[in-house]
Length: 134
Image (cartoon, rainbow, N blue to C red; front, top):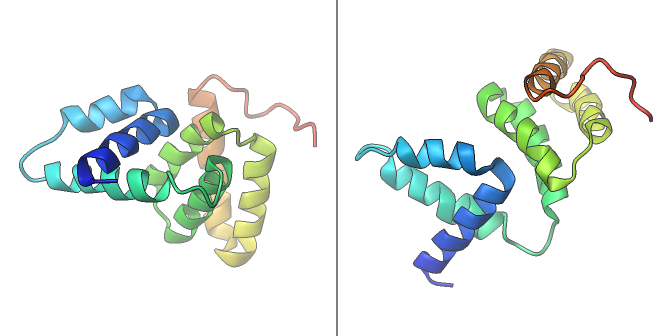
């Protein structure tokens, strides 16, 4: 793949995972200062990594959520919690990632993410207080 193809494929995957609204906001906010960075993210994160055949997007979502918990990157985590459903990730699976993160990333990080996930689901109109079937 050349750089233009990698960008085009990355943009396609980025839209599929994060949604058109988010990607459009990012592209509409391009400046001389951040433009190269946004192009790099699209080419490398989405065009190089998220398109690799070795892991399904479902697994990539779970891994990304776990890493963002460990890095304490709540804004990016919020974005990926929203996007996880488009990759087939269930709330029960996210709960398991949060439980494991409590051990490997710390109780405060997992606790904050439980609250963040509930707020994201409430914003999306998904009842976060309902009983999990698992």
